[in-house]
Image (tube, rainbow, N blue to C red; front, top):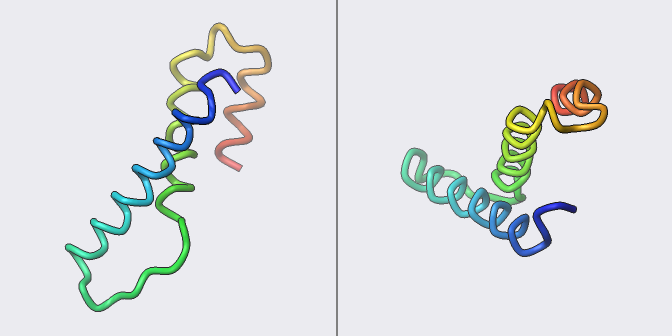
Amino acid sequence: MVHGSLRIGAVYMAGVLAGSLGTSVFDTDVYLVGASGGVYALLAAHLANVLLNYNNMEFGIVRLIGIFV
């Protein structure tokens, strides 16, 4: 909401590309299906955003608990 669709899409695509490239380097016999790298990139970006802006957020503890659940 704050960062816009273009930035969120860039983080997602970077996670997908990094996950697929990392898998192709370390395990060449595996075929990839899905977008788990992108999902993990979005979760990590949200965690970083909450930790960096915790004091300024409303319901910061609820967001932090939601990430780990």
